[in-house]
Amino acid sequence: MRRYGKHTDEDDIRSRPNRKGNRPRTNIRPKHEDAAEGMVLTVDRGRLTCLVDDRIVMAMKARELGRKAAVVGDRVALVGDMSGKKDTLARIVRIEERTSVLRRTADDDDPYERVAVANADQLAIVTALADPEPRPRLIDRCLVAAYDGGLEPLLVMTKSDLAAPDKLLELYGDLDIPYVVTSREELENGDAADRVREYLAGRITAFVGHSGVGKTTLVNALVPQDRRRLTGHVNAVTGRGRHTTTSALALPLEGTDDWVIDTPGVRSFGLAHVDPSRVIHAFPDLEPGTVGCPRACSHDEPDCALDAWVAEGHADQARLYSLRRLLSTREHTEGD
Image (cartoon, rainbow, N blue to C red; front, side, top):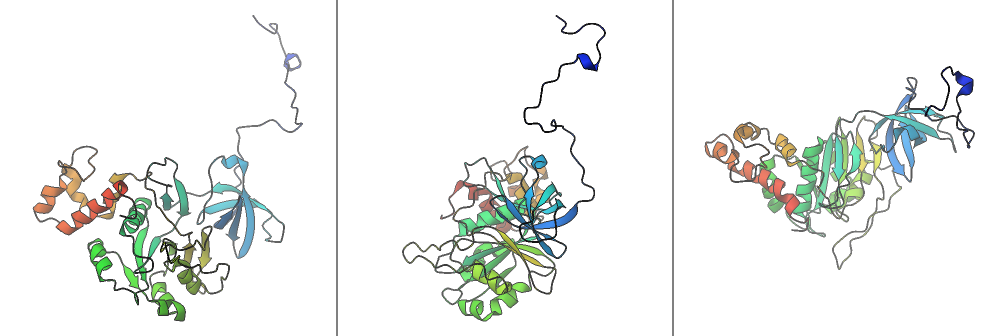
């Protein structure tokens, strides 16, 4: 049944009143061509601290971005008040395409992935050689996340005055990962920071590690002007440290264009989001051998072509072992 007659005009059309009195919603989104460019330095309860030119600007995410969230390291477009003055607030209207992402899940059964850091070039995995003891499975998981997200890994071993690094270096030697070994004395006198700084040139480096390994102490030594965080202590009973960084924070290295991103200490590193087929890309010497693999090969099964390819002498057997150790890390807990 027709509600209106044959010849209707606009006056005949009923319109539902807008009870809120504001403008009707539209699917047309503003383009904001004149938005300023910025970088997210930290996120705290919906407020984002951004660097715009040489000013620190507080901002919030625009509703038009929907569920898409900005994280530390993101390049963003902002509009509104960008004076950086107290009690002013800008608005993030666009998140630029990311060059890399460091992601994790709460555990391997958690379908919800969390992007911890965006656009970092390098992942510095900090581990103590003792007090607390190294956790190779956690290191493996961080390596898998780095390879999956497009970051180059750097292994930083602390507290060499308590234990030798030989055993850990032997475990990761075949991966050709650059590494730095430091002692507690070097952390205190600044020598450790000087040596680590050599690996940070021209890069944005995210630092990750479980609590108590000296990660935040090292970051504070690299960026001495930042005194926001206090170093925690290691529990003598559990061997675990207390979290001393509660949110990721990007910090510039003085006198350079380099950045370090300090992240909260982790107790677990879930890899539910990782596609195992992408990990092989971190092994360019093995990747050509996957041409003969069956479809959807996990590279850790009887029909994998890598076994015959490596046996023919195309690559080192130790490299294949390292690849499969990383691929199997999702099947074990970090403490194994």
